[in-house]
Amino acid sequence: MNDKNELLEYIYQTTDLGKKGLIHLLQALEDKDNKIKKDIEKQLEGYEELQKKTKNLLKENNMKPKDKGPFIEMMNKMGVNMNVMMDNSDSKVAEIIIQGLTMGIIEMEKKIKEYEDEVDKEIIKLAKQVLKFQEKCLDEIKKYL
Image (cartoon, rainbow, N blue to C red; front, side):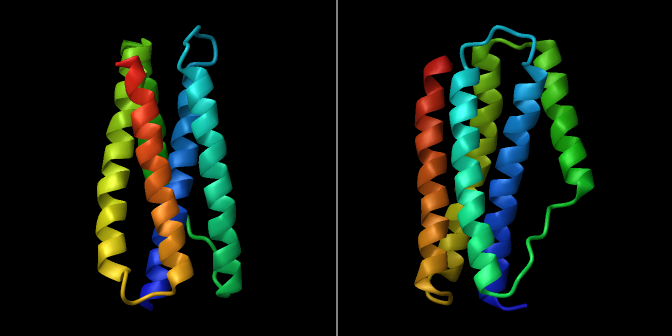
């Protein structure tokens, strides 16, 4: 597999994992009265838009999106449900989101550095958009701590 494919797949998996994680979180908070839900919905819209851009680039490169797999998704959902059951306060939910975003930011920065000189500028531009989006989400969600 070439570098372009690896980075595009990684970007897709990142946006997919972010999107699905936020969907699980919103489902877990469905009957709760959390102020943070509006911010989660806004982040979800952002991930959906970035995933749409990624799918378009994948299609342009004759690639099909590949998910992380059902096991990762199941673990993600179980972790979210368990954490929210124990404490569904806005600060705890923010902490869960911050942990996910922080891991995502670190990995995306590594990938950008690793592939920056080897892949299309358009793909790097998309990776940087995802990174900037994650950093913005991180800053915005801190107000709930």
